[in-house]
Length: 288
Image (cartoon, rainbow, N blue to C red; front, side):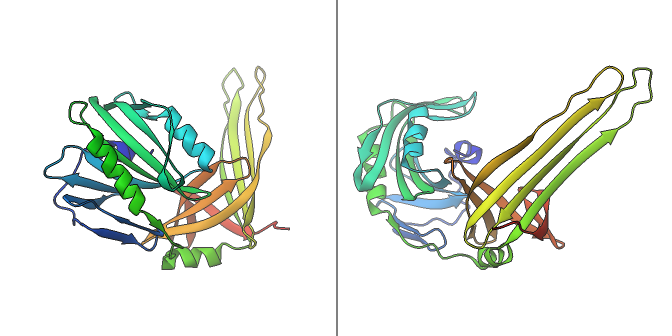
């Protein structure tokens, strides 16, 4: 899970707009119902729920994941962020209603002992909705389990409605090569006679049919009288691509054929295109 999720688990700021009852996110393609006696609010990319009578918090998030087998492995491995936030599986993975998977959790969050319960439901082949309740060990009980299951039962999926930004990038990136280049070189005129540098290139061909080709080149060298080292060309294969967006936030999602799913923040500034803050140049694609 993302670091932001783990840090904000126990935060419930009344300064945010709070919701109750049915919650609908057309851009995400999900609808769910907050249990009676609980209220919820958006905290960055999470939806956090709290109650004035029940201890603990319930958190929902949408994540990119490569199928149900990957979801099961995620639950088996637990959630590990840093030394202070370690949640391990405290039971075997079980089948939940609506083709979901669930597991009990225990461990630490920000160095505070907690117990929890999490359910994951596949929204499609590449995305999962995670619903997790956490509380202190002495306060965690079957009520938290029942609440998570109730929210999961209320969860309904629909075709996501893309934002205007996502529609724009979907059109702009068809049959386009995105190319990234980073290089550095230096000369050393000392007695050792060492010079060095590196060059890294990434090419991403986004084809109109929905598939992509990705290739990368990395060359690091140190040349001189005493040393020589060179890197190797590598290719990362191909898969399918799509652009997703919520409001002004837009992501390029790459689903590799080996099962890996990668999301990169997609932005445009002063005519330049950026993926996760790195500048990519638009060129003619090599799509076949």
